[in-house]
Each structure stands twice: as C-alpha cells, then as structure tokens.
Amino acid sequence: LVTHEHKDHCAAAGGLLRRGLPVYMTEGTAQALELPDAEILVPETPVTLGAFRVLAFPVWHDAREPCGFLIDEPGTGDRLLFAADTRGLNRIVPRVALAALECNYCEELLARSERIPDSLKERIRHTHFDLGGLIGYLRKLDLSRCRRLYLLHLSSAHADENRIRRAFSKEFPGLEVIICPK
Image (cartoon, rainbow, N blue to C red):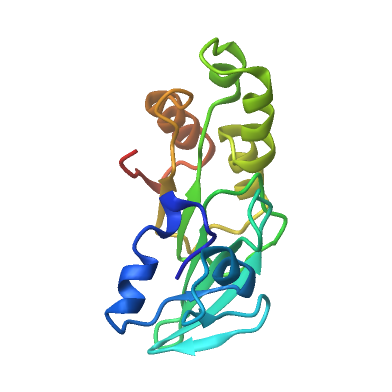
C-alpha cells in the first residue's frame, strides 16, 4: 500500500512490481510514479485484500493523489488508521484499535529553526501533521478500543521525542505510544 509518490514513501514500489508482487495506490500516484502495472485503489471505495478490507481516503499533501488507509480485519473487528505526510485529518474514525499517524514536528522547534528558510517552514506546516494538530485530532476520536498508537515520520531537526512522549502521556494516559525510528 503506497500513500503517495514521494520517494521516502514508495522507493520499493517499482522493484516489488518487477518481482510480480501487487502494489496498491491511487491512480494519481501510479501516474506520478509511471507505474502502469500498479493495482489502483479508488478513494472511498473499499476493497478486499486477503483477509483485510482496505479503504483509501484522501489526505492533504503536496502530491498528485495522496491517501491514508483504514484497514479492517473482519474476523476480529480490529481497525488500523494509517496516515503519513498530511497536514491533518478531518475524518472521524470509529472503532480504531491501532493507529499509525504522522507526528512530523513540534511547532515551537520549527518556528525557532534557523536552518531552513521561512518558505520551507510554511511548506512543512501545510503538508505535515504537527504535535498539537495530531493531539487535537485524536481528542475528537473515541480511543477506548485503541491499543497502540505508532507515531511516524518524525523530523530529526524539528521533533523532540521527549516532549512528544510527555504530551501523549498527559493527554492520553494508558494509551501505548510507540515512536517509530526516524
């Protein structure tokens, strides 16, 4: 499952297709990557892939047709919410058992950064989830069934893992939060 055409999210797609393995993405992503053999996912149209039901849904990012995924396991009723490289989500998702979501930066660190120009700071703000935005989104969800939250795509320069851990411990006590390697 490929979310969009940026190389840090799809680098293996062509090689997997050449080996005869199915790779799923939206039409816009397949066109951007020039991968005519990709399996096409139509946003908001669920498909069954093996034992899973997969729904691609649109997200905000600077790519042709980026998406996130809801992946349901009908046998257990578990649901995974997956979204990386998006400035936010407005979809209220019920019954989330697992979530893997971007937490790219802490606004205070990005604002103070002298390493990047203001134009790049604005691009980051308009295309990536920050700590405050992610917490605000998660507050809108019923996380009573959520066993684990994986935080993805942290910036090495603008995300402070300790600050992020403290914020999630305060806001969502008892929720297991795993910060994935950068």
